[in-house]
Length: 67
Image 1: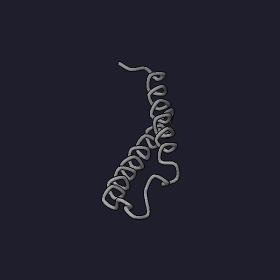
Image 2 (image 1 turned 180 degrees about the vertical axis):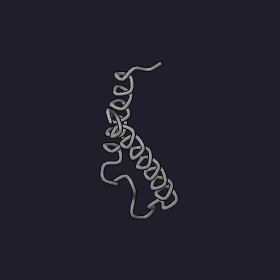
Image 3 (image 1 turned 90 degrees about the vertical axis):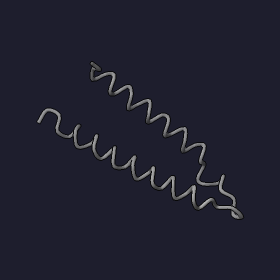
Image 4 (image 1 turned 120 degrees about the vertical axis):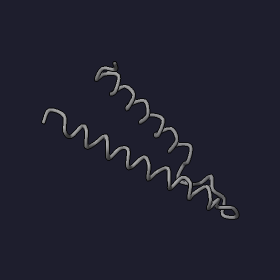
């Protein structure tokens, strides 16, 4: 079974991955004006909503620790 440190390390790793992804996206500069990729944007917005929901869930669990 994973210990607390494993969970924290996993969250830190995913945080780093997200940070790297945001650096790659670079403020949306990789989307050209001629082809904004609306379908791709919609798919990314859906994934961002999933990330938000999962973080909300983790936040609720962490908030209940020790209580």
